[in-house]
Length: 327
Length: 145
Image 1 (cartoon, each protein chain N blue to C red):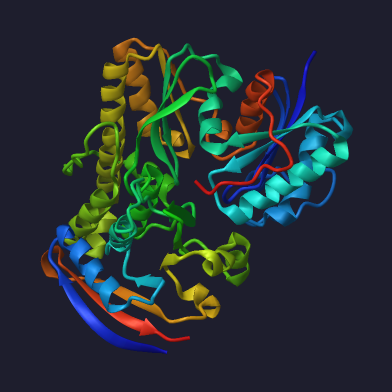
Image 2 (image 1 turned 90 degrees about the horizontal axis):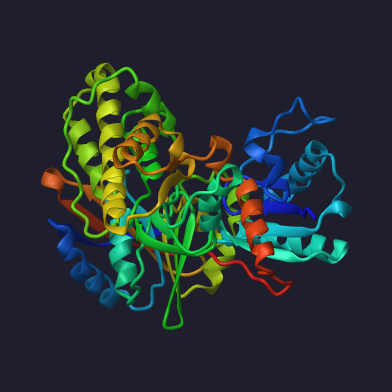
């Protein structure tokens, strides 16, 4: 028998609703990427973090795409944390309301675990699985052992996330905020001719704050025209340096912990250099390497749904007393 | 109202715990600290040391993306927020940060301008300026609502 799972994600900027039939994604609607042409009606532009306004519209769109009705739903998965409490409360209370109205169980999901479980949408990585999660708000290394829900965070950023480093350095270079994707774009046209010192951080932890300040001082030696002229080489060098910081720790963790497969998750996994180097690393070490589809890497409800599915299989349910957690 | 109080010159990061001790001793009744300074000035680094001074062991990570991070230690609730990404007052209200301000024991806020209407007691504004040779000048002033 197949289960229909409704998943709700409201932990940060985007409002997202997904519908899964077991592991199959029937719909995965994200407020910032709403396809206006698909909806049978006029959809307004949905603003960041306006979860209360967005949720109903995104839910209707998801039901429309999945071609199901709310009463068909078997369980409701939602993000319990970490995230902004105000944002999480909207999703949690919406889920609780649906649970009461439909008389269906709730499943509370951890957003960070869900980023990793996104790999299980299209693949079944062999365990132990080592995942590098890199996004605007997070940078961590997690080891998944025994079963897909058994997570152990072995390294994390001590200050800024890698995605944040990209965005803030882009701003220092005069690019719009958030400018991570612009760095990637200019990097394609440049060469990594500049060398920057690598942060010396013990264990599997990361740090990008000192690197950001170093780049700030480095760029101060250039005039505005020189920055413009050198933008491709600067972006290429910076992108290489950030990716190398990530890859070095990833490599060290793979050598030490000998996982059976590895993967990357989070929005920064869209970065071309990171994708290339992770794939190269996997090839060199001859270890299966997984990168989820981009729509499952950024914040989305499909990853909440797949996590909900595995929690449902292990009868790990939430209840009306479930409260959000910020971290 | 904002009135200048005193200034610290910081040459190295290792001096920060001492500076923080001096600030805590000088302003024993202040629970809200507001920060100004350019990108890379060291706002988050300063707050990291401040929060760790309460005994918090976990990493104090940048709140730029998450907007607000909460820490709890021995019954103390500590808020670390960065309002950089918020566009207007309504967005601020929806984050729940003004409500959190009323229940936390200490608050550290970067890019704080938008939250001033909700600050009902004296706060300290800490301005961090980057000087020559990577030195920093910290200027503390009292914000009196």
